[in-house]
Length: 383
Image 1 (cartoon, rainbow, N blue to C red):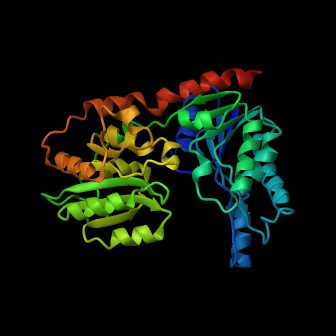
Image 2 (cartoon, helix red, strand yellow; image 1 turned 180 degrees about the horizontal axis):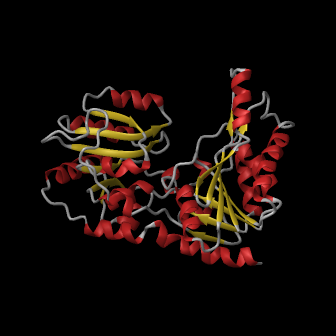
C-alpha cells in the first residue's frame, strides 16, 4: 500500500506535522511500504519569463526519491492563466497522471492536508481511485486569511464529505467540523532529535553564546493572527539587557521590521530541522507570546513539545490549550506583567527542573502517536 500525502507545507523532513506523520508511518512499515509526498502545487504568477515557466514545468514532471520508501513530487501550475477555472482542471489531471504512472496501479491511501485551490483540483482527481481518504485538519483553516472565504469553506466541506477518516488537531476543531468518523490527534515531537547538542554551532552573531549573555527565544511562525504584539513590546522593552531571538518566519513584514528595530532583537529565518536542537538549547527561556483567540484555539503548538524535549524553561500565554495539556511543565502567564515577571524568574534560576517536561515530550513522540492512526486506518484499507 502506498501513502500519498497531499501536503500543506513544502517537504521538510519531520518538522511539519504532516511530514512527521508521513515519515513515521513509512518507517514503521506496518500499513505502508511506499510513500509519495506531494508538495503544495506551486503557482507561477506574472511576471514570470517563458524560459522560467518552461524550466519549472519540466521540473514539475520529475519525481525524486528522497528516502528508501519515500518519493517527492513538486507539481507546478506554470503555464499562463493556469489557474483559470477552465484550465485548472486540465493541469491538475496532467499532474495526477504523473502520480498514477508512479503508482503503477498499486492501491493507495490519499492523505489530505491542503485545501488551497490548486491542491484541491489535484485532490479531486486523485480521490477517485484512492482506497481510503484521510483529511488531516491540522488547524482551523477557516481562521486563516483568505481572499475568497466562501470558496475555501466549500472546498473544506467537499473534502470532508469524501473523507473516510478525519483527524482533528484538538477537540475544538473536532467539534466545529463534525465528521462521521473523526478522532483527535494532537501534535507530537521527535524526542531523540532534541537531545542532540553542539556547543560550537554558529548562527548569526548570537551563537555560539557569549559568556554571561541571556537569550529569550522563539521558534516558528510569527503569524499576524496569532502573535500578541503588545506583549512583545512590553517584554522586549522591560528587558533591555536580554537578547531576544526569533527563529522562523512571519506573514507580517511590518511586525518583522518593528522587531528588528529593537537593539536587543535578532530575527533569523528558519534553520534546518537537524540544527533546531542546537538553537533551542541555547535559550535561557523559550516563549509562546500568542493571543488567545479563535485562531489559536484551533491549533496545537508543535513548538511547545520541541521546547520541552530540549529541556529549556517555557513561558506561555494561556493559548492553544497549553495550560490544560502542559500546565505541569509550562509556566502559563495570565497578563503581560505576569509574563514579564515569569520570564525574569526563569532567567534568575540556577537549576531548572526539566524532568516533567521531558517526560511529557517523550510520551508525545511521533512514534508513540501514529499507532492510533494505524488502528483507525486498518479496517478502511482492508475493506
